[in-house]
Length: 301
Image (cartoon, rainbow, N blue to C red; front, top):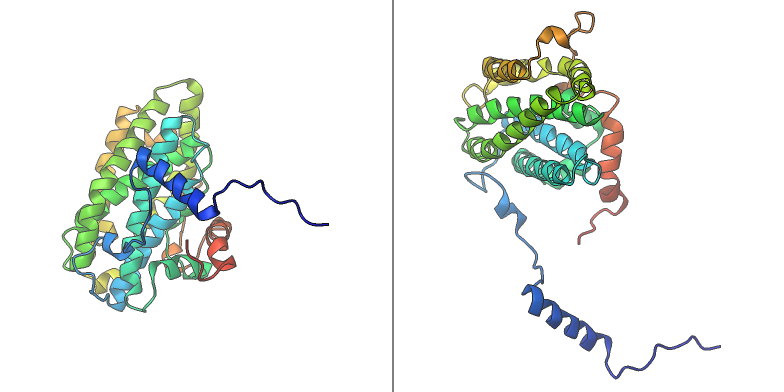
């Protein structure tokens, strides 16, 4: 038995496709997409610059921070409490992804790897992100507190990095700090909104502060790498004073003291992400992030 045939229309598939394209062009203009030179979008003073091994290690740390936080924030799209927040968190995630691409691209020049290879083909112990960025989204208050700590720190970091003696790091810092200023403002406004809202919103904010604050100290720890990068990268400890000034101002406006959320029995997390020792949360995140690239290696679209 022969399979049923479609009704005759007098037009083949090519002519139908051309007609639809013409209709689309009439409404939207040219909607065709050519292959983009993505390398041209990357921040950097010199696209041909090759990072030293130490610079590459440093850039990978910062790139991994931005990549993992971007992946976390992407989860909120279609789940945020307001449609506007779907867009806001999505845009912040895209900014961070751009930072990650620039930093991982530069890091990869030392070993001949692309930013995609570094993102999708490294194993968990090869990542260098701090524990703060690995933490689950929790409820919306947890995401806001994590974002507040991250954005204040990144504002200090990229401001200092813009003065780096390494031209590529300086260019990345100068571009990224402009975007991070919006991230910080977004997190500050939501912190004040939750603190001054209902009793429940304030309670949840204090719980989030208690849960997330212990991961802060790892961001400010110096190690031998920073000794070797004097002038090229700011010492993490040098960023603490500026961070604390902004952090304390936000808490004061929210009428929150550290005694409201700190617990001497908990202390600060030992971290270890810079050395590849991670929390139990990173592995599942990487499995989700990397599954498509690993299932279809070499695919493009």
